[in-house]
Each structure stands twice: as structure tokens, then as C-alpha cells.
Amino acid sequence: MDRLGVTLGLGAGALVVAGLWMGLVQAPPDAVQGEVQRIMYLHVPSILTAYLAFTVVLVSSIGYLVRGTRGWDRLAHASAEVGVVFTAITLFTGAIWGKPTWGVWWTWDARLTGTAVLFMVYLGYLMLRSVVEDQDRAGRYAAVVGILGFFDMIFTHMAVEWFRTLHQPSSLQRGTIDTALKLPLNVNLLAFVVLYAYFLARRLRLAALDEAVEARDLGE
Amino acid sequence: MGPWGYIGLAYGLAAITLVGYGWSLGMRIRKRRARLDREASGRVGVVK
Image 1: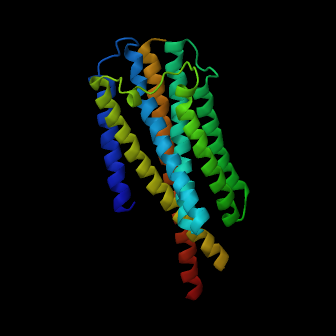
Image 2: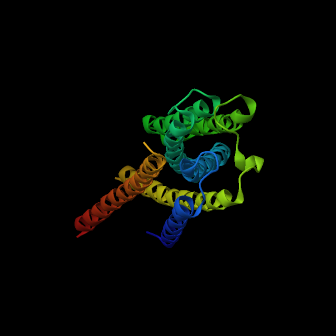
Image 3: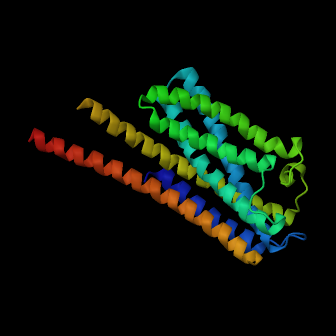
């Protein structure tokens, strides 16, 4: 592994351990929800990291459509894959949190449905890339999906403001979260962002090796 | 299930997902490297 990968991996590991300790031990239980609210330290950082990943997909997809260079396409592809992993974590931690607080694992409210659609859109993005053989064409089609998916992300995020939803609005955005809960949340968010950077660096390394294999196959 | 049961389930599944994805990335990188190394050493053999 290169030096950047090692640094990011060690940094992510240390921050995850710190985040776990702060979220599971140091932070007080929520006044209303009690201990189960600790799932927030996974659920919120994972969706915010997925938002970051899909914003990188948007920027690099536009970059690819404008410039046509493979580097932008590789970055979009790598970030979409990592974003799907974090969205999956958001979905199942949300369901696990929903059962003790709402009494149901799942409900078709605008935020939950939007997040499920977001997951499907970027899963479709990855599937599209694997079914179209021509890499340039796959990159262009995927870039369009990557740009459209970003609008679903905005819709999903704003759904709690635009519709009457069971899912609560963002406490972070409204500034209604207590400092005792905000600090562990921020540490966990930082841990997830560094983990995202680590996964992205590793996924880009894989993409570079894939291209080397492809170039060798074409050369023979 | 009590609150810590739900917390354990959420954190356990998240750990499995993240470690599993990291492991899968590592395995895919290792496979590509092994293939490139194998082909490179094969070429050296041809030149000899």
C-alpha cells in the first residue's frame, strides 16, 4: 500500500476507535429516546458521507462530460461505489433505529423512500457500468445518471422540510442538538469522512490496476 | 430486544459492511497485482 493509503487507513482506524468510545461510552443517553439514540452516531455520519461521495460523483461526472478524460470517470466510478456502501449503512441503521423509536422497521415516508431510491439509483449506476462494454460509452451514460442522482439526493435531504414526514428534520442544520451529543457526532463524522477518503484511494488504485490489465490485454 | 440489542445490531452490521468492503477491495487489488506480475514474469521468460 502507498504512503497515502497507509496514512488514511491509520487515521481512519484511530478516529473510528475514538468515535466508538465517544458515542458508546462518553456521550450521555438522550433525554427522550434513552440509550438507543446512540445509533445516531452511525446513522447521521454515514448519510452525510454518502452525500459527500455523491457530490464528488456529480463534480467528476461533469468533469468527464466536459473534458472527456478517464481520470474524472475513474473518480466518479470509485466515489459512487463507496457512496453506495455508506448509503446501505444509512438504510439498515435507520431501520434498526426506527423499530424501538417508531415501532416499525420501515415506513414509506418521503425521507426513507428518497433514501431507498438514492441507493437504487447509484446501484443502477454501478450496474450500468458493468453491462456496457465500451468504457467511454459506459462512462458517458453513467455520468448522466450520476448527475441526475444528485438531484434525488437534494430531494431526499430536503424531504423532511418539504413534506410531513415521520423522520425528524435535521437537528444539526437547525442547531437544536446539545453540545454533549454534537461533539461525538462530529468526531464520528470526521472518522467516516477519513474512512471514505481511504476507501476512495484504494478504489482508485484498483481502477488504475484494472486499466493496466486492460492496456496489457489490448497490447497483446 | 432491549436498547443495547438494537445498538449492537446496528454497530455489528455496520462493522461487517465496512470491514467486508475493505477486505473485498484488498482482495481485488491483490488479484490484479498477481495477474500483472504473472504476465510480466511470463514475458521475461519469452525474451530469454
